[in-house]
Length: 214
Ligand code: SF4
Image 1: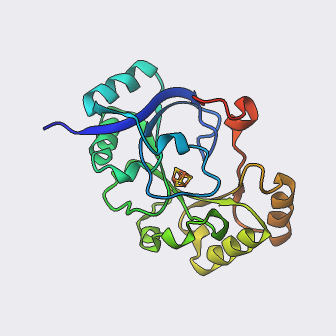
Image 2: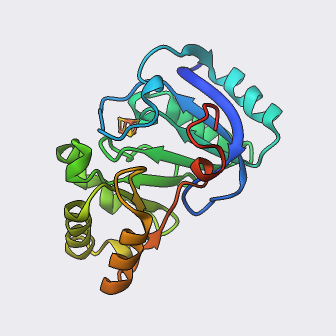
């Protein structure tokens, strides 16, 4: 039987984060997440959604007309059929980014997919869910993202960066949690410590705030 996935929304917007920031993209948001980060801004994707066949999802993506596709959630890897969906998107010539919490294994993800893997900080409330076994599975094209809420979170991330030699694996993103940590503080800490990371802001929030569908 053809695969199917529970989908919260498929929409078109500018990619607000990661290496592809600012580019028009089609977003496929899968329903459900086993985590409950304190700062989560997509709690509306925890429940509900509708079942859609992979063929129908591919058709919706094709209709969007964007070369870039962001598979996000929720936690996309919580649904097994996301793996064939991403492979079929790659086969169809799309550039595919996967946004994942870092709590589930990325072992089965098609190597052509760019993985954007979170490492959850202590202030997220989900730090113990980090699946460290994922780190050796990352490729140079992938990215590791830290969403930071405080100076204590920053110090934790700095320690992890050094301990795991993360910058030697792939690009590292430090992002302030919206409304919790001042952008300027994070920028000055990164500069003072000469960290090999990229400061990331959420472009879509600058443009549209918390308006749904972006
Ligand atoms: S992993 Fe992402 S979707 Fe899940 S609770 Fe955390 S921020 Fe929200």
